[in-house]
Image: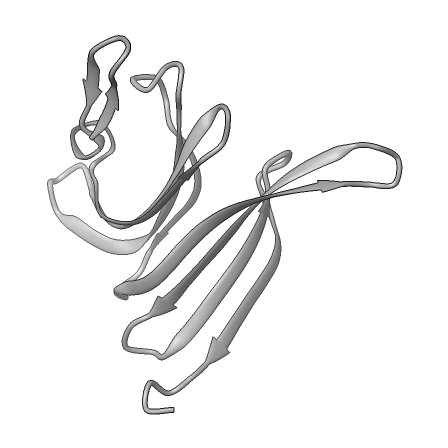
Length: 133
């Protein structure tokens, strides 16, 4: 649920986007960034995957911006989202989203760096690790 206590407005994320099994949430001054593991399709079937999207704080009922919509058959766990600001030598500031999660079943840990200026993945690391070690 997105709740604006000043306006008294409530938005159910599942009703709005069909995304459930929300694994991690963070925010900046303009958006909430949400990482979910399941999304309902048009036929009402819930698909596993990686679903990363933002909801605007000033207009939560508006259109969401999806950065990742990867349908797969993997549960994820141990996920996190962070926002990193970087100032270049020329003074231009970049904002990046750092996403990490563990893929259950294939024993990988993934780290993504997404540039929020152009919504492109700038870095992706996928490492294999047995849970026993």
